[in-house]
Length: 357
Image (cartoon, rainbow, N blue to C red; front, top):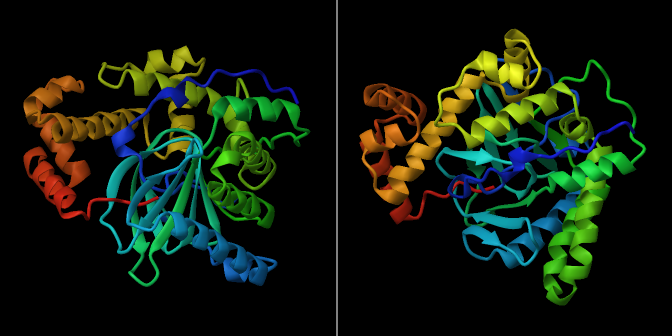
């Protein structure tokens, strides 16, 4: 494969306070390009070639997650990059950042919104995200008897690049539409590997030697499965997705700076019009909208965690006008800064503010 070695600076960006439970998402290879009010959902019992076998596997994965995540919340595990998530009730929509990774709902359901794209998914489906994306996420199906149970596996970008160079993968189609977020039915071998990874938590003494092998298998299956084209577009040096990812990396590290789109486009060797088109195709939003969401989500965290006032926060994240900051903030979060922060604090203290993976 003519893949070139690629440094993935965008993987270094972390909004730890904003990561949603089951972050990444996957899109079906047959999905149409991002469009207004597009909703994606699948019924795995109707689509799967072996529904009984897959259902049993899903139930096994749900059991293993529930046995470890016995209380509501986001659970770190002894396996690097793996978190487990449980909710006993539906949650309010939560703005957060989805990074490179795979999200699985083993029981219950959730919804993720990226711009005008609405993705609903549940057991038997996988959600993949290939770049850091500002989304709105919430659990849509959960109760005490059948809580939401999910897992999130963050992927190693460097390892994906290396694996792509080692595998005999078919060439990408020129008609392949880039996707930063994709939804797909879980194939039985991938589900089996994910279940084995969670079960490995029962044998902590074996995690160090075995977990990297299972994680490598999972990445191989992702590269060769329905999500593969989107991952390969990302890691292929010189591809439009790779070039846009480089620009996103710069924006994420410099979101508080004024940006000239023409200069940003030139930095990745694109014309301004081509750059805007590819950026929107990949992320579902314009470069300016992407930067604005990064600014506003960072502002929200600053006010929550450092008790900054709105004016100071506006200046910190790059706004010259406090009134413009307040208007943009209200448009995104549904309330002016002070009122929104009070609501967020109330939700946090009340224990209902978690959004689940």
